[in-house]
Length: 74
Image (tube, rainbow, N blue to C red):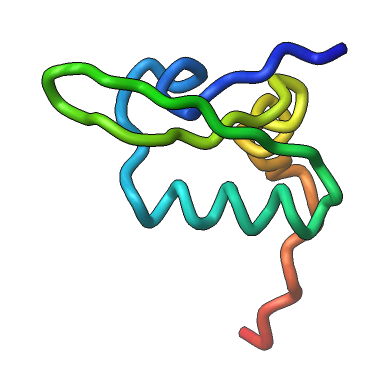
């Protein structure tokens, strides 16, 4: 079973709402499971989303820049 992690655990910092929504939607589109965990600390109290570590590694993997560039007309 893949380790379930929050974005904070994976990134080492708060991800923010916008990135959180993008990751959540990508997990749904890819059919990845997700879960929640209740947390409470001085900066945040509430539920956080958890994702499989493998999904987060794939989502945040640097994009491959070796694809051929589109030919420019000049």
